[in-house]
Length: 126
Image (cartoon, rainbow, N blue to C red; front, side, top):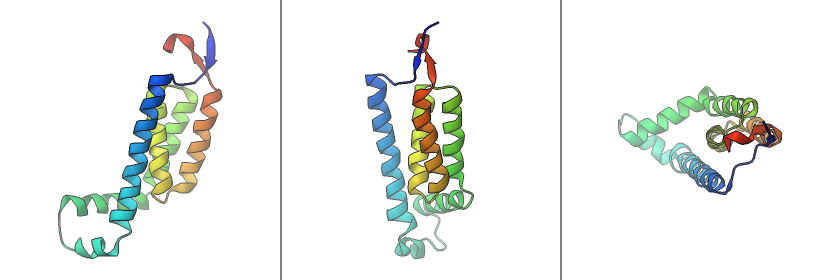
């Protein structure tokens, strides 16, 4: 079987860009509009709206470094077995991790994603 380096095709690249931009936009919105705003924190005291519950969930996940851990795990899977869907998931997790205060683990995951481009990929998968 012929092997070549992992490289998404043109259609997959458009999907990677769109979903990566969506994840980055969501993370920026969550951080700067909901998590860092003190007015939102004060408004969410004792209130159970979906916005306040989402904010509390994001803060809890940040406390456990869940965004960075998810980025590392998905990037390692991508490094071992390269595929376009796993690359998209790893890229989204890395983008969210970088913005949501888990930048040490997420930047390591970004490096692993870059290394995954040098991994061989079976031509039959293309």
